[in-house]
Image 1 (cartoon, rainbow, N blue to C red):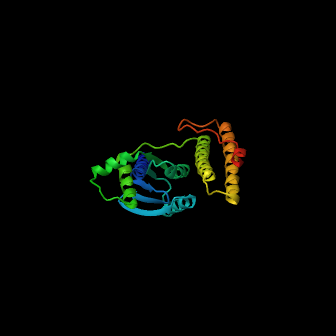
Image 2 (spheres, rainbow, N blue to C red; image 1 turned 60 degrees about the horizontal axis):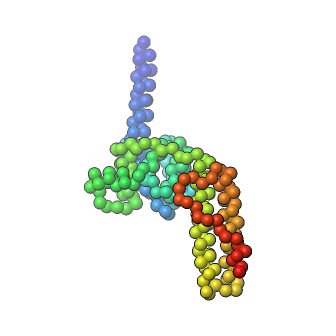
Length: 225
């Protein structure tokens, strides 16, 4: 009987410890174009670190958490489009709880704290406190197929922007001789790349709802006229 009560009490203690660990251990992340600033709240302890916003930087973040004996944390970051999506997906795939929140929610929380100083490090700490206080809903990433489709759409749009720039350069009065031929070669390559992406788009189910794709590029032979 005593053994049974001891076992039950131990299980309840460990369960409370696990809940407390997840409740108190949060990671606020401020994501920029070049860098990622992380602020860890582990009970009453804090730690901060910055990393490059790149795959190698994500690996450094993993190593930093491992060195602190942290296998799972509630990570919170603002929704900043392409800058934050790759990191959110990386943290989710690594087994962490991830929340991607509207920046306006964090801004409102900062107002409740009367916080006026704004730096990347301060923002990361603010996001960590927001995460601990508000417990935002866990985020689930899109399917691998949707991730690929989204990447294809972004790549197509980037190529299309380059095509417009090169087309404008081709029409400029000073674009002559070998420079003109170089521009035409680039346009030819862009045209082929965009056609390949359109073909891949069809294989993965087509473009998702969003901004309308502009017309397909014109026949590259017209650029020689």
